[in-house]
Length: 105
Image (cartoon, rainbow, N blue to C red; front, side, top):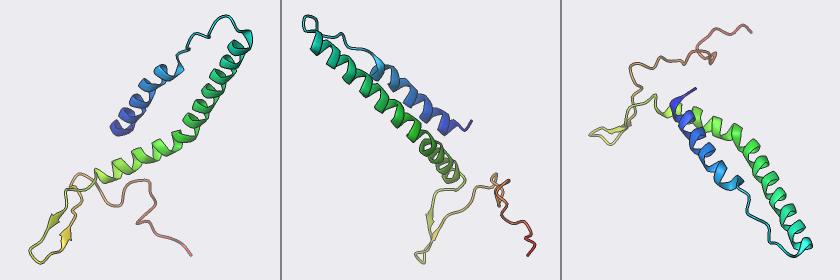
């Protein structure tokens, strides 16, 4: 797994236990206690749904970060042009993308 994606997922996972802790229900009123437990369960369901919807986006963000790391810092030339060089250790086209391959029509 990519280091940037791993770090992002790890930081997201570390925040989950704090949101999943249960708060003790107020004692004495059974209706209030039942409402509180339903509200707690609803919040858990929303967080699980958010987590499942955000997983593909977080993975795509990791791919974008990996793509950005393939380039050197931009440099401004004396004529005002901006040059962004690809790092020497990153081949072009990236392997497995299908770019640069012959296409039969």
